[in-house]
Length: 412
Image (tube, rainbow, N blue to C red; front, top):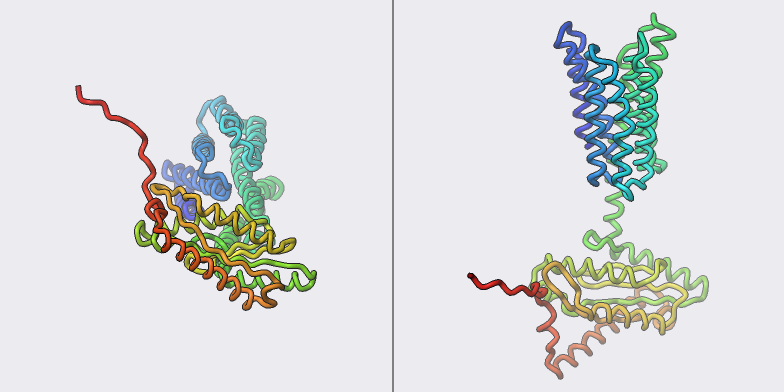
């Protein structure tokens, strides 16, 4: 949407070249130029709201684009009944309010009500000044532009409340862009003989462009930082972040003379899932397992994916061996329950090894070795049981969900 908005700005500049041509060509150029400018602002406003994909947001954007285009066309053409402008001015306020009320509870968003308030104020201003002799049309046009680009600054402020160069430059740029329409009218009224080059009035546009580029770069840097420390599939901390969290947890435990626990979890039948159902189903299993683990442990604990089908959990204070075993038992029970995927129900199970600091080891490497060894002991024990008692379990590990019971009617 940012790209489309800037394409509209390009159309605005191109159409502006024809605006001073006498006759219908100049009239068309001025109309297209102004409509492109307000359309770009509306796209910038919509692009940054978190609920832009909702139907009500699309209706809101479509309504404001249409009302702005119609209103500006009538202002530029000039010859029109007075009442038509008043009707459209009322639409500026009533339209967004009606859509917001119809979309409740979606209309609870603060930005939605901010847009409504801005347009209601704009409608009142237009009704008061648009028919004023002399400069009424100019005031009305400036008010529309000011409202749109001030709304852009408000939306970007809510979306990027962070102390970065991109956020600051973009927000300030939109404020300056909106102020151009006020300052320009004021200077035309107070100092009619002073000519200001158009490049000066266009400076806020370049400021916003630079700010948006910086925002994109900042977002890319944040994504790269996240991917460097997290697993791309599950979003859990990867081995690098796990080792850092492990070192921090050990240091806290040493300082407070408390215990911490490490759980190493290996999924028992994950290879069979990949071999029989495909890697795409295996990815779904890993994502669901990550979600199950994250919901089960406390916020202060760490769940990480440290291998293909291996997960590690750091349980910090207050904890002890009994609590760690309770968590281990709960996680095993959760994985013994079939996982419901799109077309299949998959039962995988898990082998879990537990190591307690400082009882089992005093450093991170030794703690991991102890937990790994106990996890493999649990896995070998489970395999021996399966060899002694031929498992019927894998037969039910993966099966398609039952179809809805429906008996087709016999042909008449």
